[in-house]
Amino acid sequence: MDDGLTKVRGIEERAFNAWPALASVQCDGWLFRFSRGLTKRANSVNALQPAGRFRDTLGLAEDLYPRQRLPVIFRLSPLAGDEPDDTLHRVGYRRIDETLVMTAALGDRRPADPEVVITCSPDTSWSEGFASANGISPTMREIHDRMLGSILLPAAFATVLDGGRAAGYGLAVAERGMVGLFDIVTVPEFRRRGIARRMVEALLAWGAARNAERAYLQVTASNERALNLYEATGFREAYRYHYRIRSTAI
Image 1: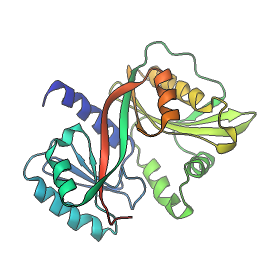
Image 2: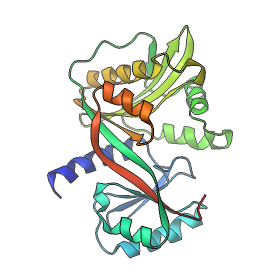
Image 3: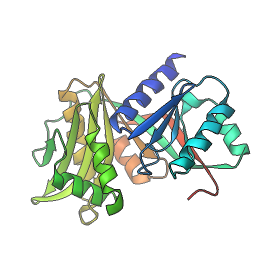
């Protein structure tokens, strides 16, 4: 594996660890993740170091996911190579949700914002507010909370306060010299007040305090507002991934 792909794999591994699936299966260098449908990242087939015939991997996926009442979804990073994408296109999987993985050097960061409250575990108010702001349905809350409880690495569960009220939420996980940022979200009535930028800066400062030298995050290519924010805070594109899902899947 060349140096570029080695770096991609390092970020991919950290991201899987930071947002754990409830169950997983490995086959020929592919990681199958299962979490009862909550987020595509945690319910898809992902490349780590593919080997063997991709048709065998596809066959296993088309057996396992329907048994869990889940659509078959492949998340294709540069680690997957070209063949899987070509094969999936030919057999009727449509391409969706192109996503950028961005990284930034931390360098010197401002002191933590006193109005960004960070805890090392999610309390009830954080979990409820985070789920509500991210549009997680009540039927998925139990799955969501189980996934949060499965994070084993040092994590920051952050809330931005505005006038004493919760205005935004975010999650960061630190591992091996990097900090990953996840699901930075602003409560709708507080948008356009710089809440997301304050959250990002506070989580980067938290990561730097835990000896992280670089940060990473994932953002859909169509989210121009978020892309502008992340570029303004020093993030640059490292690589992209996209999903393939059957056209008949919902």
